[in-house]
Amino acid sequence: MSSGDELSWEATCHVRETCLCVRVQRAARALARYFDDALRPVGLTHGQFSLLVALNQTEPPIMSEVSTALAMDRTTLTANLKPLQRRGLVEIAPDPKDRRARLLSLTEAGRSVLASAVPVWTKLHGAIERELADAQVLRAELNVLSGMRRPGVVVPAGEPVPDPAPDLP
Image (cartoon, rainbow, N blue to C red; front, side, top):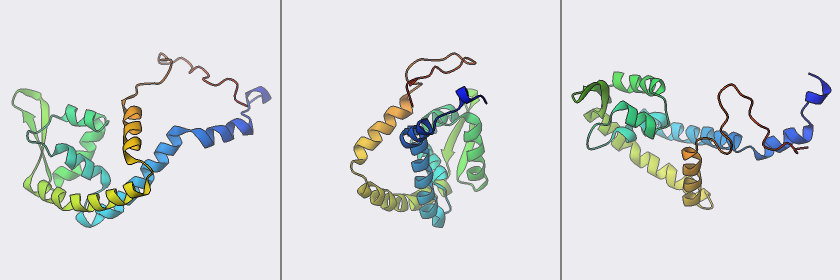
């Protein structure tokens, strides 16, 4: 690396102090640990709980709807469904309207586990919300981030990303 390519310490500090992605990831990991610990007695992780909640519908959703709702690709969704299916909490069946699609539904055991997990979630979620200045604003802002495609200029695949802040120290 030539000296012209080196990143200044000031620029490194700026990224560390302001990077939204790092802060959201750190917060997500901390929240995941809190919920994993709280849900452990009912035999679920936070991810499994979220998946069971997504499946708790009046009509079984198709896999693509659930993957979209959870911002998860189908391969990851399938991998996350397998342990729940092995435990008898979830059923996967072909959609009679479209044999290529898969319907996802909770079993009675899945509904029971979910029902026992909701009070645990409610208690911890309430405690976390009480620590926040404004949970509604945070939810709204996270929804904005979740709905974003890419801020600013769309860069075609394979092209370098333009420097959004060329004047950083």
